[in-house]
Image (cartoon, one colour):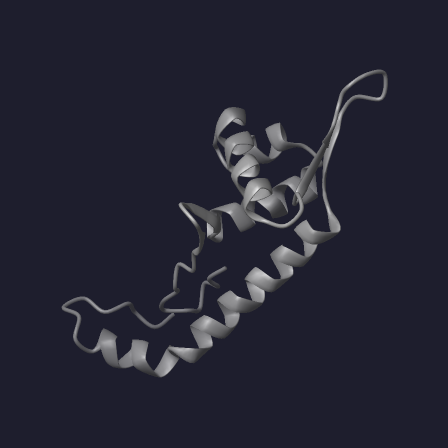
Length: 123
């Protein structure tokens, strides 16, 4: 994620065949699912519909060697959603890639900004 003191960020997307297997929005969704224990609540927190959140989860589950999200059915104790061990690992790895990517281009981005008519302001 981009902190408020950064002047730029990269949108890192990992493509697998015809699908975006992981990107910043999907990583945010996984983190919201981890926090809320619910696809519906995670979707609401991100102002997206349950269907959209579920579709993104389905794509992620399809793209990796194992599911990232496990959903349990409702009942007396109600249902819930948890991240699998692979889901937790994917978030950690993706966030590490974001940090490394942003750090790797810092010098070049500052040079690039000098070419912009309205470069980002230092905060």
